[in-house]
Amino acid sequence: MFFCKSTVRTLFAIALFAGRAWACSCAPPPPPCQAIGESPLVFLGTVVQASSGHGGFRTSQMHVDRRYKGQVKETIELFDDGMCDGPSLEAGRQYLMYTAILPTGDIPSRGCTRSRAVDAADEDLEFLNQYSAGKVLTHISGSVSLQPDPSVDQNPRDEEPVPMKDVKVTVSIADKHYSTNTNSLGQYSFTGLPPGEYNIDAGFPGHRLAYPPDDLALYPNGCVEEDMTMKVDRRVQGILRDASGTPVPDMLVEMVPVKRNLERWHEPILLAQTDDQGRYAIDGIPPGDYYLGVNIRSAPIKQRPYPSTYYPNTADITQALQIAFALDPLTYDLNLRLPSKLPLVTIQGRVLNPDGKPPRGDDYPQISIQEPGLTGQIEGPPISIDAEGRFEVDLCEGAAYGAFASAGPVRTRSYSSPVTFTPTRKDTRLVLILGKTIEEFEKASAAMEAAMVSGK
Image 1: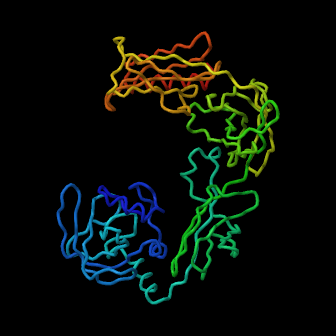
Image 2: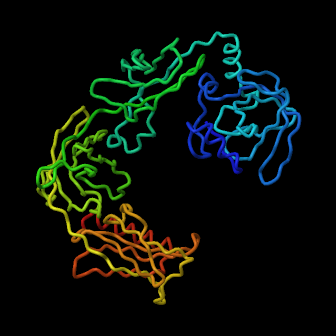
Image 3: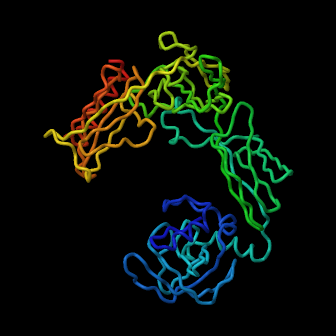
């Protein structure tokens, strides 16, 4: 929970509510029993005066009618900078406020909270009345559902989640563990738990959590609602070694579908980074046939200068082993061996306008070196461009790359035609000529990627 600010007060709000998102795009608010634990100050109040403000900033005087949590004066001032979710306070109306007193003494009326007009707060008031009477039991509850397979339905988010029955849900605090099973609606609940920081996990044969949840902060007489999603446990795991047999850490191991999609962003992104023992594990794999390897989707880069290598250790895709997954859970244990590193070549490049002159520095020229087919920016620091439009970049010899340049204001930015090139020691020059509109550039990029995917 944090309050978005256009003033210096933002810094205090961020520090106070660091557990929430760093942005003014708010997730749906938690239920009242969770919101009261996360909000230092909860009260019912009537606005007696609201200023029109200037620059989007307003202040309101509010009479506090009833306090539910925290200490506050009978009449207070709240500020509203117009950012983030929250009620627009109007004189004469009553509101239920979930907020805080900042270190400056200011009280914000907006933020990612449940603050709302009283006529929309029936659920909150029913809970708060029980809370004030000491009739609320601390609890953790939620649901567990099954994540649809993208390859079964290309738009899995359009499907209703499938409740999972008999999933074992466990919450843990210190050396204490509490477990229960979900009901036919996929729901679970723990009641009467002591407050504190809880770890939560869910287990079901042949399945695993799609997104392991964060620890849960359970406050006295409060609650936490945590919905979890599981996926069928289809995985590939193993060890990556170099040519000498030594495990290789910090390398990406990738999987790509045997049948490529012209719109590659529809393909599942399946990859894992090796640990300090060279071990990797790729899970959440949709049904289908795949290739496994290193740099088979990504281009080799200076930090990972290896040629494309498919399992079982071949550079020839026609010799690669296809790895098949059906609907059922399945685990493959497959070890990979890297070939020798590719040598690096320093590309001597230049960016020019159509008239042959370099772009101006205040046009902020940029160079993008991308994966083949312009599917993604490769890693590395920004490429420096001097006043004459010259630049240098180290790339792997014999590997294919895409590149383009851009310069100028955002609305009228000029682009070069996208190019595909292969660095060699005899060919280290790259010249990019600006002059394309964004529409022309995107059309040329789409045609290049389609040609690459179709093998033409």
